[in-house]
Image (cartoon, rainbow, N blue to C red; front, top):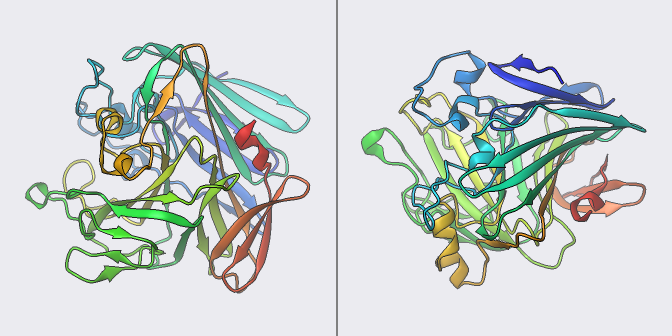
Length: 380
């Protein structure tokens, strides 16, 4: 399949009647993605300013940063500055940095699939990438199948949204939260031009009340906010649901974005709120109104070594690693989508599976919206 250059990166296109998506060959990043909603087409994902502008950045930076955009699969998730048993993984793993194989496209009965693969070297194995869009569905279905590996691993998805430049226009909500915590140590260092607003290690039960560096609390459920700061926090959802979710509702724009995951595979969600808090290269204070929704099984964003060893999250009973067996593939399924919402729909309160391959989104004030999504894909 022939690639096309999109924002400086050779990319492959897969499209249905309702979704058009591009995947970069370098790092396998998904963006842009155009969702056709009622009366409008919306592209919710970020493309880093330097990529958008066609700028050259320091060649010594990892490919991850050169291509940075949209959503990408991490194996292992995190910075990975500490080697694990001789394994030195790049930031967010080879899957988020290396060059994937040329894509193959198939189309059958309204189902459009893009397939790519990657042979890993740091821990030898193979990762198969499937990106699926379906006629009439406002969703992107992703499946990553890992074979040939064994041992502990911390997988994750790293979706990055570009929110409108309008303070607090997005309303963030999740499945019921069991535990929430700010990154235990400072996320940014002012000595090099980085600034954070949340209290390191601060615990919380709701996004509406999260400890602040300066005392008091911030409401993380409204974003963009806290211009001039970058922060990272993590939530663990309550167990028992067939799938867990995160949603960002845009009442004025009349649409909602959502992610759906299998909580047995991706056990936590890290929120990266990047709003101009990094003044060093290549961020340069211009990375604003960006929200990372990072569905993972990991010890925050630190890396594999820190996720494998006993850590504060694992001590509390929240797993930060998955054990892979060489003879049994690791399969990580994931869904991202969008839907139109009626006037007055304030914030997603719940997302549930409904009949005929749909999901039902209900707002705090009782309004409802439906999206054509096959949630059974998560466990297929």
